[in-house]
Length: 100
Image 1 (cartoon, helix red, strand yellow):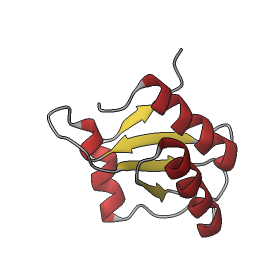
Image 2 (cartoon, helix red, strand yellow):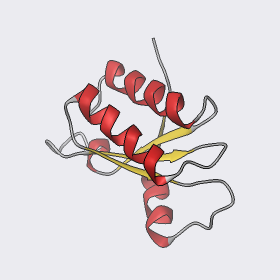
Image 3 (tube, one colour):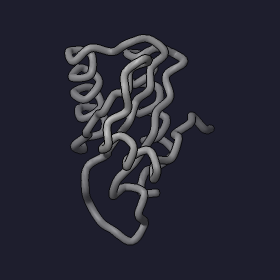
Image 4 (tube, one colour):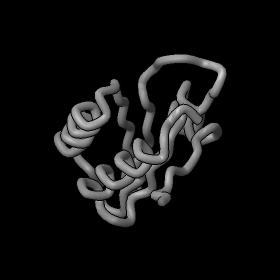
């Protein structure tokens, strides 16, 4: 995984500040591949309560400002059906957790 411990902690803390403390934050995409370079940070957030488009945009903006990297944010709200793209992303995703 091509994220530092500090970046992971920032991502999880920021997502939970906006989406709730119980939100699960998953990384998927090119940042999981240690042999690649560059690329954006692809995140899947599963909040306990629904996150609207404005809040999703705020999460994205805050992370991009803090990390100085492009970030894509996908949200799977409770009770919404899983679409095919989300299913594919979830199969390769890795749960991010705060570490010290």
